Length: 137
Image (cartoon, rainbow, N blue to C red):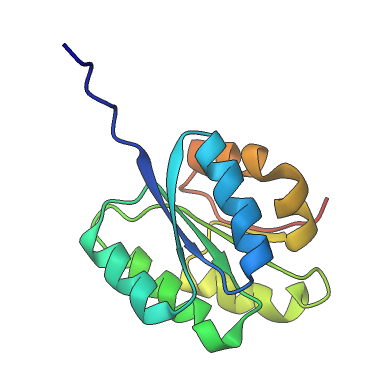
């Protein structure tokens, strides 16, 4: 008799950089999540509308992906997941207002995401109702 597998918790990742997406995917998988990586906003939105997500990670540095629109559409879903956004620390002042207006729960620098992804995931999942402007450490 086999024991049924526990379904993994789905995480949407909007990222167009292959190397960065591989790092994110490996870390999330190691933490027990089932990450789905998207390079195009339309595919990410369709996935969000058809699945129950526990978290979304969105790269706000890529204007071609329309990250603000993706977050708005994710947040329009019933029982929306928290959104962890990230961008370069240099562009943070320009991106922050739009990311927060779209519904991003936490916006961090790429370097913070790379070094502390497990802690950031725990933080945003623990308090998904709050919105924080930035985390640059």
